[in-house]
Length: 128
Length: 128
Image (cartoon, rainbow over all chains, first blue to last red; front, side, top):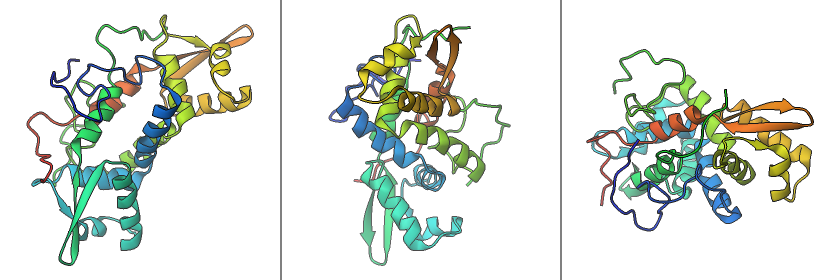
């Protein structure tokens, strides 16, 4: 599956299909530690739902006041999960008056998608 | 916000870029729970390194005896991490004689890459 051709700056890990991903070469320890934090942030159903609600929002951003009602959880709990997503670099936010607004940082999910993408013509046969 | 219209078949989640992913519509709770397990399995540096060692191996499979020396961890600890990757559906294994051999299940990583991929022409603008 071909990916976009443009160079990605900074968090470059193969979103553009250019660079070693998780599947092409053994990860070194530092990179594994850093990457594990992002996957760990995704390793929770509430956070995944929050991320999908934020990412799929027409207009690109969501008020925390529109997120909380979808969960049987307190506002501080939701805010904590949002904080973990933010610390993982997956979303960002801004306070405007009473409410905080969240949006996806698509470079982060692009990056994860890239490193999970198989190299074209790579080895990876699944033994029968 | 509308959810996917098509019945989702088993693990097919957009490896081919065809199906709703994490970024296109709010995840329902069951799917979030199931998906969080896979991300959680990736949310550990040792497991990420193991997965990358297995996935990038020419020939497509690795003896556990070739994995253990890369870590300052006991064989049972490594085996435990491998078990978690296996339970998440990311790898599979087979015992042959003394050793167990592991290989990537590329459909699983394809699936994750697919659901993390932005829809072509999708909304997702990052506010300035």
